[in-house]
Every structure is written in structure tokens, then in C-alpha cells.
Amino acid sequence: MKIYAAPMEGVTGYVYRNAHRHYFQGIDKYYTPFLTPKKGKGWTSREKNDIAPEHNRNMTVVPQILANQAEDFVRMAEKLADCGYEEINLNLGCPSGTVVSKGKGCGFLADREKLLRFFEEVFDKVTVRVSVKTRLGLDSPEEIIPLMEIYNQFPLSEVIIHARIHKDFYKRPVNREAFRKGFLLCRHPVCYNGDIFAEKDFQKFQEEFPGVDRVMLGRGLIANPQLAEMLIQGGQPEKQRWKAFHDEVCLGYEEIMSGERNVLFKMKELWAYMLPMFEDGEKIGKKIKKAGRLQEYKELVDTLFREKNFK
Image (cartoon, rainbow, N blue to C red; front, side, top):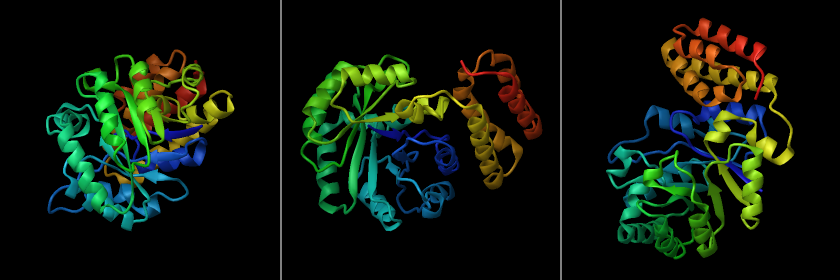
């Protein structure tokens, strides 16, 4: 079973990816938060740093592009190929209202004729492998059937299916029956994405889909950075490694960000996912959320790891 780390805007940048790779095993590919081509403009400093080869050594990283114009996608994909990347992923899944309103992310799924022309132009020009991360559709899970007819016409290296539609965002239940339809129709390798938070979720999925040989972990991996390893090897979360991982992420942000406030914002975002993994962590969690100074924050985190156990 191959396991991939999903991209998450503002969370899974190169600082996070490197710390995760340092302390935990089990991830075959890390996907970057999406890059957005801008006409007449180069990389932003954040984008430059996130895709710089020196920041992505000793792991397989797949840059993800958010675009609905083939020329924009090809231009950025070729720049990334020049940086040494061998695969580029097209984001057809982002449910953000601002993204969808521009006909990008899963909003692009609504215009299948345009999507078909997009792929025709991309594969006429691109020299690097292209995969897609798609939702089941914009308005209906049945859209996966005509979408798969489009995907099957092109030499995609992989199709990652997030088993929801746009309005589901991340909270409504995944639709595995619609995923099954897409999986059975697809001529490319298929990766499943959606609501694998623990070993029991993974085991249930494997029983239901023994033919699927790859999954992508998103919020479950952010909540439990040891999750991929546990799915493969079993075992229990280890506080010592979690703490070392946390400290490396925090130090990484301190080194590249100006001001404690920015570092605190990034670290508190992580705790929104990780805190529910701890027993009776709510009281300290509230203090962590309110911490205004980095030293205060670090002392509270030390207390949490010292006094609280995993659920």
C-alpha cells in the first residue's frame, strides 16, 4: 500500500514536510499546497522557498498547480520540471468559495468541455508526468462517470479521488459508492482520499476496496503525524517523537518568519488538529490558543506533553 500526504494550505509547507520526514515514516509522496500561475509574474517568495530543490531533499515531493488555463499550467509545469520535479498534480478538488467562483479547483469540474480542451492542450505540450486530484463532481456524485470518461482519454499518471462533491466540503460523509464507480471506470492508477483518521478506518477501507493500492491522508495525518507509520506497522503514538517533531517545526518557522506572532499563528493552526488526540487536553489547549508570547506557548506545550496522554 502506498500512502501519500495531502496538501493543506498554510500547514504542509516545506518546514512541516521536512520535520515530518525526519521523525516519521510511511509517506511515499508529499504534495505541496497549490501553486497558482499569475500572468506576467514569477514565483512569490513563499512559492520559491516551498518548491526549492534544497528544501525538498530525501523525499518525493509533487507540486500541485491550481489553474484552469492550459497555457498557465504548462508554463508553470515546465518551470517545475526544470527544478527537477518529475510529476505535477492538477488541483480539481479545492472547495473554497473564492476558488470555485473562478472556475478553478472543483469549480473546473462544472465545465467538462473546457476541461477536455484543457487536457488536450496540456498533453500536446507538457513534458512531465501529470496527475489529478479530483472530487466526485461539483453538484452530484454521479458526475464522476462523465469526468472519468475525460480522464481516461489522456495519459494521466494517477487519479486521486476525494470522495465528496463541492458542497460536502470536508464535513459531510464520504461517498464510497460513487468512489467505487470512478475506481472501476478509471484506466489509470487510482488513489483514495477521504476520512481515514485511524487504523480502524484504514482496515474498513481495505476490506471494502481490496483492489485499491494507494491512499492519501489529509486531516488525519495532521492530527496524528504518526498515522501512516501506524497504518503500516501498527503501534501506538509516541510522545517523545511528537514533541521532537513539534519543536523542529516551531524552530523552522522561527528561522524563516519575522515576529513571534506569525510563528504562533502557524503553530496554533497545527494544534487545532492535534489537540483532540490528547486526553483532557482542552484546558491547556485553551491556554495554548490564547498564548501571546512564544516562551509562554512553549512552556504550555511542554506541560501538555509532560502531563497528558494520548487517547
